[in-house]
Length: 115
Length: 114
Image 1 (spheres, rainbow over the protein chains, first blue to last red):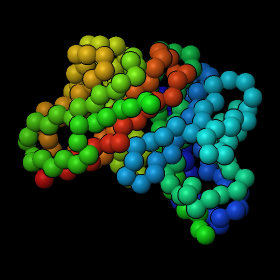
Image 2: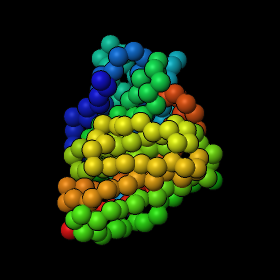
Image 3: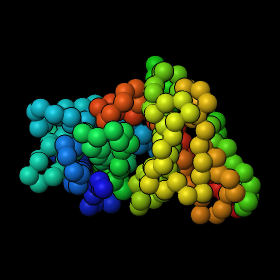
């Protein structure tokens, strides 16, 4: 079975400060990892993914994420937060070496960026 | 521009009614998915389909069925709606088999069962 843990229900950060949204995963085999963002009253939007290669992945809107195999983590980061980054963030995982094509999502972390 | 559309943004039904949620994608994607989203639980997979007339159960298929008669359309059916099926339902599609490609999501249908 595969699972994702997002240990923080909410993260608060001041505008201009760096932000981190945490994600740890459990999966057998090689993981494929994703971050999605959900703005109010909208569907999920893809931010970035890790498949293989460089552990630091860059994505949309200045976000990046670092894959750490030993800690089974895939934390989302941004050097300087914007108020417009306030949204609900989901981490997701799937197995890379089987035919299962569906994602398992975490419970989500609400990011609140204060002006 | 990539597009996944869902037939309704808001839906109110009564207990015991049969409910159809429709999803259409215009990207010629092979894979399509139905999730429900509940606060504190994230997204949970109900069913997915990787080809026309093919379907696989997700993590919470009980009380639901699906239909995929055409590649672009994936329907979720609640045979007899119950109050515990009140939720946000999200449809998604992805272009490749396997886990490489990201999924594209529709705007969601907020279903209330009274």
